[in-house]
Length: 180
Image (cartoon, rainbow, N blue to C red; front, side):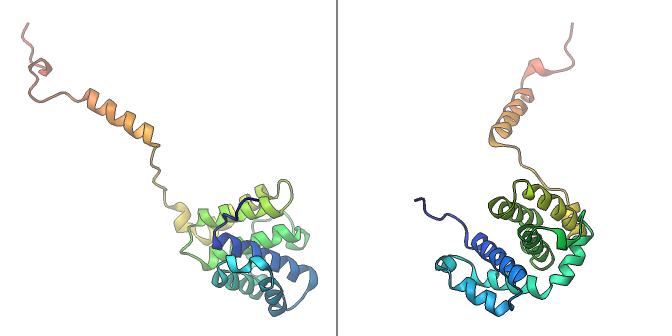
């Protein structure tokens, strides 16, 4: 069996999703759901502070999150699968409250959750909805152009081309005033 290589943050998102799933289906109080999730053997591997923020924040702000999400959905939130709804809630909550996490990371983590726990193409839906929500919730960050560094091989090739095209200053054959 391969060792668990998930980051504590990713594990906290997974456990928060499981808690939101339980909360939606059972209607249990947040404290009951929280206690149940904490009983799991692998809870020690998560970022418990982020887990608390996600689970309790999503439950507390559920109505407000649904309002934000509904502007970007093609159906009512009640018609979403419980997994997709939970993933979207976590993504929307992080976009709103965790500005230290880049919006692209929030979306990527939500897509990974949807791939792991959701339906076959649910991750595509999650990606589209959160991309639109990010444009609304983090408009400045989304509008800021991302500086992309070309791969190392391209940088080296570009440097080599630049060196090949530069003419040495002391090269007499490089003058434009060539007498004929």
